[in-house]
Amino acid sequence: MKKSIFIISALTIVSLSSCWWKAGGNDPGIEYAPDMYYSKGYEPMSQFSDSSKYRYNPYFMTMREPVEGTVAMGQLDYQYPYDNTPEGYEASAANSMNITLDEKDQLEGERLFAIYCSPCHGAQGGNDGAVSKKQAVLKPSWANYQDKYIQNLPIGKIYHVVTYGKNSMGSYAYALTPKERWSVATYVKRLSLMDSTGMVPPIQVINGIKGAAVVDTAAAAMPMNSTKSEPKKNK
Image (cartoon, rainbow, N blue to C red):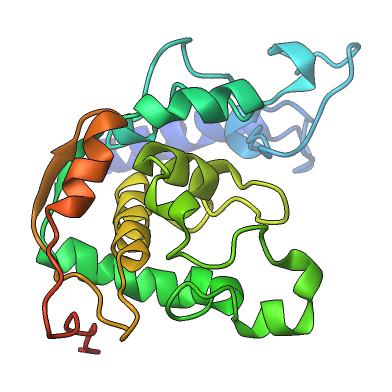
């Protein structure tokens, strides 16, 4: 029985070997399923010519565009209906902040302001940051954040500027999520109400801001008091 199994195994090996080797042990040059030997993986940034047999997608792309109108998971708040145009800027005054900013969110807005905004606009919005001191030409036309222009500026427009940039200021959409932009914009509105002694209105929970007309009301709802806002603490 064992001898029969041995003979059958030997014959099987010889039969399989004949598929790959000629007499003398030379490779016949035949590959079965060659894609398994040589991967046809595409590099996302590589491009193919019209004549290439690997050009499956239009515009020489190796990646396909998503279906029109689809939004990636977790990216719904990145949809923004206003264009980076003068008309889009004016229309953004009616933009609604349909989120809730609690104390933690607003403290984060203060921290982000210190990182991204204060180098030009200064710690208290006086347009006296290190960059503005060296390049005065970059200063905006309004004096500081306590200017009536900023006090009356709809928060939707502030969000628009943070998203796209305006004049000498560039876009910060690469660094700040939509919620973080609202947090920074909210802190800008608080700074606009700072009094002559440097007192900033305290943080209050903001449960959405609907349209431009409500912005001034939301800002006025943050009363002045004799204590400064608690600074962000490093953890």
